[in-house]
Length: 358
Ligand code: KG4
Ligand code: ZN
Image (tube, rainbow, N blue to C red; front, side, top):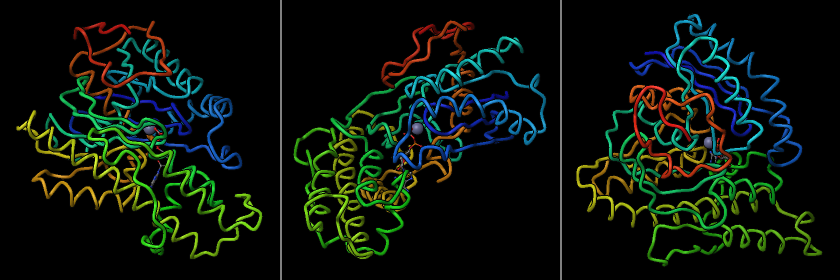
């Protein structure tokens, strides 16, 4: 079984071909540089860039895989949630290929692609507890099966990656902010500033990062002679210390909420054995190591995708497409791309050829 997957829901144009032996036969990825000057992704520019590059990315992927299009059994694409212009490009391309090749089309929920991605490199059985932390989402879920999720908590404001990006912007570190914050934090003192832990005692699994972000803003402004953020006079060490304090506090919040989720998970799903983290922020090694420690405290196995598959890529879409395809969860060609698509809504109603209509 061989599946081609296309990713275009944000600022990465990706394609990959995987098989059911968990082999990545070929992949290609282009991360758009066009947004750097704006400090965030500009949807219209992203959509145009996907359109410009998607054919080339698929061709490169096929060349690397040394296979012909006709050897592919199904074509999958991120069909939402995401920036709709880009999602449309990937979905239309996948539908056109599906029609031309007479092979099924699989509409993949981008969050499900992050959720299942760790299974390509690790032996993880259902159910497992998942922390999904990306630029657009921050959720704690039980992955019960392909297409079957229980959401335990979510952010009530910013996503974790969004908070990294906004703090990086305040510190003039460029976009995306996560990797730069992680780098600087490694030389910083995480005890220098005290930051708030929003919602920490709320007794549920919900998260909030907006107060944390505002607290960082106030610290940065306090280093400005006129109180204007952009005029802040921060030394390299000041910046590193702020990064370290922010990263540690954000991680503490995630760990605390996951701890509550683990207790629930262990009680309701005693057969579950794994704690998984995925999404762009899962590339953060400080977070990964904190979660590894947490998992071992509760006798769970910690797993995460390889770092390069944490941020958006074609492999995760191809793999999720394959997992859906082998359960016969295919989609008709009138499937409408979805800018919003909660993961716990994506449960297929009735498996079968021709499959699930949205
Ligand atoms: O999953 P992703 O590529 O896109 C979305 O689906 O949103 O995640 C991108 C996010 C960005 O906010 C980026 O700053 C964050 O992941 N990120 C990181 C790291 N690498 C990427 N955050 C913290 N530490 C990192 N090393
Ligand atoms: Zn993503």
